Image 1 (cartoon, rainbow, N blue to C red):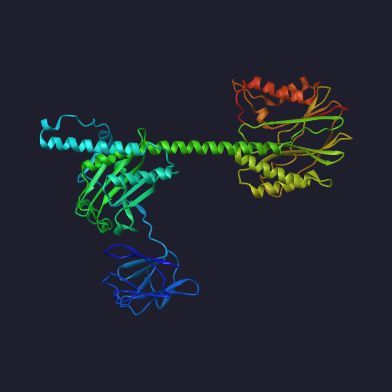
Image 2: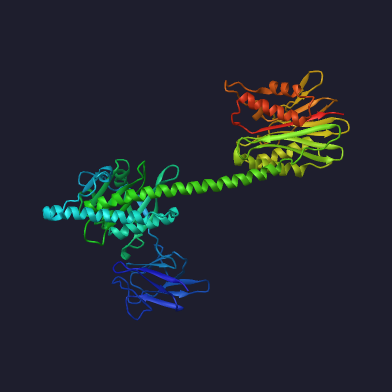
Length: 558
């Protein structure tokens, strides 16, 4: 069954659950749904059950039936949220009208504003005096009693806000408290959020049923007075105020009295609270403005605390997720160095954050060949680690006994170029080592040139054979070959090592890396790795790395 939400121009809104297959609407009491509207016909329209749901048809009305602003001829299907206009009566099908807030440019505040008080003057006003009432004048005693009543309300609200609540629940609770202690027809709590910063309505209260579904219009200039000039603003008899003449929308709203105060958390303004009276005849006064300002200050402090707690909870959640991501990424890297007869091979990775974009791997191709790779994704952190994981999956799918390194690089380049942003790329080095002959076939896609260190003290670098992966589509790569001799060392690294800097801003560089590797060439390569990272710590005075650091060393020992 569907529901009609009916909003007469005069009188209270009401709802009707459609139980009949055909429900007539009109002014006459013999209709299934009689409407208290002098502008609709005696039998005006009918809502009926159709094969697909519900529809509405005009049944010979004088002024016609409208659906979503268009006059219908005959009948039309209805969807939830469709608005039917019968006379001056608004009817919404199967969905209530939602009250919305609009910030308008329609008011230019001037000297006729009833009160515009710096909110700090209200917050800093001393506590009520404790003079015995019998010794003071009646009017002064009334003021003292009013102040005591106000502080009693503040004390009650303070106690009600002691317990922590999630932010959304807290905001609702605050507006409940305000509505309970300050009679209003409507109220809005808005917070400064987003980038660029704007005021977003977080809680809307409509206490007068006749105003349900009507748009709440808040003047931007009044908001600016509250936020930029840091004033608590009170306006009354808006429809009679000369500042509102010519502004039909606010006259139609019939605002009788309104207040707008900043939410001040003792450091900054984080939002506003707006309240108005339309059906209530009594206007807001300056005591109401004081009370709303003081309550708003209490609320703002509590809101700030709730925001900080939620941020801490979110940060803790993200920290746990990053720890999990770091473990997953660690599992993507080799769990052990390869056992390879006549070769000593080892690698190590140290991310500068919990997750990073550096990658190294050892991929068995067949019993006599081993694939060795080092790569560096542009950027750092989570986005780089995700692209690294994608590269790893693509690489593993391409390496098989009959693959060609150059053809593989072409496929990887196209994959990265299509599956990443225009600013993302990967420097990539891959070599295929023949364990029997020492022959090494490699491609270098814009990666730091690996160092080939020979026992006689000479060295060479394995230069680039093509652009970085993902920079341009349809790239080609050249394969090059060398042969590792007994005692030779191949050093693969990422720029996080060579671009590390000392306190004097001196760069570590590839020459120093080669020097440390030569000095420790007689040790097992794991010890050489440790020596390099120890030397890096000494060089940088153990400063946290600014980039991921990866090092792989291959040494032919027999």
